Image 1 (tube, helix red, strand yellow):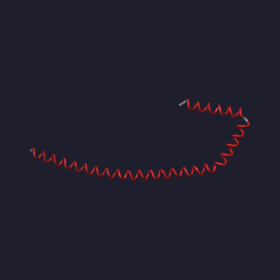
Image 2 (cartoon, helix red, strand yellow):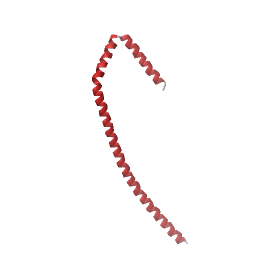
Image 3 (cartoon, rainbow, N blue to C red):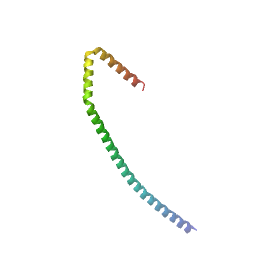
Image 4 (cartoon, rainbow, N blue to C red):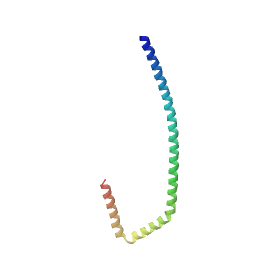
Length: 103
């Protein structure tokens, strides 16, 4: 009876070891597949981010003359009306402080 139990135990141990070896191989295959997918996703994301950056840079470049013109207008208005500029500046600072203090 002891030898029957011993043989059964040895058979079960061998079967479990085979199953563990198969599972390890499957995990290895899955890791490789996930690695390839992760690399592909990274490349796609990097390419998309590059495209978005290029588009934003083009739009900002196109808008730059208008931005420069408006900044000159604001600068001229600020130098022509310093008191009004100071009051508006203080109001903006007050709004920012109020928004930050609420957090």
